[in-house]
Image 1 (tube, rainbow, N blue to C red):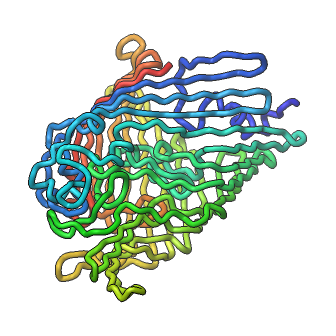
Image 2: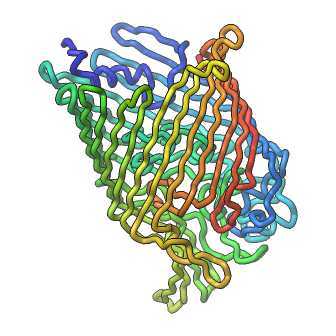
Image 3: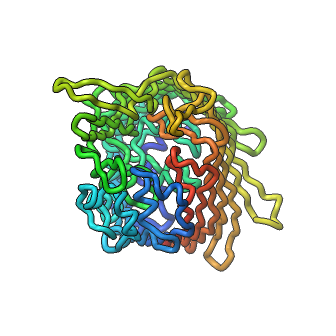
Amino acid sequence: MKLNTQQHKLVVALRGAALAGTVAVCAPAQALQFEQGDWLFNVDTTMGYSAQWRTESRDKDLESVLNDNDGNNSFDAGSMTSSKASFILELGGSYEDFSFFVRTDGHYDYVYTDGTSDMSRDNYLSFNSGIPVGGSVVRGEFARGTIEEHGRRIRLLDAFVTYAFDVGDTMGGAIRAGHQVISWGEATFYPGVNAIQNPIDSAVALAPGVEAKTVFLPTPAIDLKWDFNFNLSAEVYYKEGWDGSTLPGVGSYLSSSDITGPGAENLIFFPGVPANGKVGGKEKPGDSDGQYGVALRYITDNGTNFDFYYTESHSNIPNARVDINLSRFQALVNETYAEDVKIWGASFSTNVSEAQVYADVAYSENMPFVDLTPTTYIDDNGDVHFVQSDTTRGHYYQVIAGFTDLYTAFDWLSEQITLLGEVIYQGNNLGEGSLSEDAAGARNGVLVTDDAWGYQFRLSLKYFQVIRGMDVDVPITFKHDVDGYGNGIALNNGLKEGVKTASFGVTANYLSNWTFDARYNWYFGNDDPADKVLSDRDNFALDIKYRF
């Protein structure tokens, strides 16, 4: 079977996907490749160590926020917040029109597994997993769920097989089955529609300047891609299961909720006074069926891409539903996941001069939103319940636009400068011009405003052959949620007015195998405890990796 490579661009790419690891991270230059009969195999291994230190003292207002402060109170300024050894193992293989790809990773973090926290005696009274409030964790230790998530873990990520085929001289396609990431749209920083198609790894997503494609986790699906001709193609997938996003463990450094996520044990009314009941439960979607997506793509002769798509999925991002039984002084806190969220979307990308420009638009008629409107009801036993932080639905629309440009005319500064910029707008039919507050200062109603917008960029300065075999990159990132609140739960990109993050780093790549990275991360701009912000979690991180 001979492939018409001019026509079948998609088939060519998919046949090599298993060897290139295109749905995972970029493969290193020196990977192990070998043949066994007609099979060609590729093995990539990455070993790494990373360390992180807190560089900023706790904000007094954030330190005292009950049910949100355990991560803040677990680490003093100057303390090591992570000391982690990790690995990524990738195996790919191809035989004629068949290929497969498997990726697994794991880590061991000394801080969470063998270390102790900096929890003070006073702050221990508001530690949601602490013994004084009915928990199981002594002062200075972390909850078991937090240790399992952050301390030690081995997991299987991608695991799929692909069959590529031709139909005549002008058509072809590929079918892929297994655990995989479904990635649509053009956005670089903001996740867009992909956040509902794939679970999110929160440990990666909370870092400043991270690209959206690196935060997604695979789920079981069958995906069919079809090239009608060189210009027109289509894609359809059907999910065979559902997985929720990973949440920060209670008491972990960048966590901002003590009643959801791994390690959640109690809700606290006052320091030392817990609400008896159940915390940390999950109301998973009742049925994983009915999750699918359809896309149509057109590329013009001059290289402009147009994509149109529709997806229907269950949300991977939870909301915390708080139900307090006032008659029995008990609380039930469950992570709830909205079902059957429908999103229409479109995107385009093209080149303008030497820059690539792109835009994504999305619309949902039933997007879930956090609703803090307090309600009461009486159950079958006659007990009075108070419910806050429920979920409501509404219309949602989003626009993301951005560009990537490369500059070589400023050699006095850098041999190569890359600039990526992106702006986002979010709107809905539920919000208000500004978030309202009651007499006690607590916010009521839906946690969105009519409109919200923000932006972020990354500037990279490249220096080649600083020493023989070593290239150096200096990345600078900045993110600003300028105005409004746009919390659409399912897309995990709700803006919080005033929040800013930034980072400055130096990355050295040596002989295509070694990577050394040093980075300082800032969180600032919004100090309001009601927004669950991380504005006092500045940190410095070091990372070393060896790939072979």
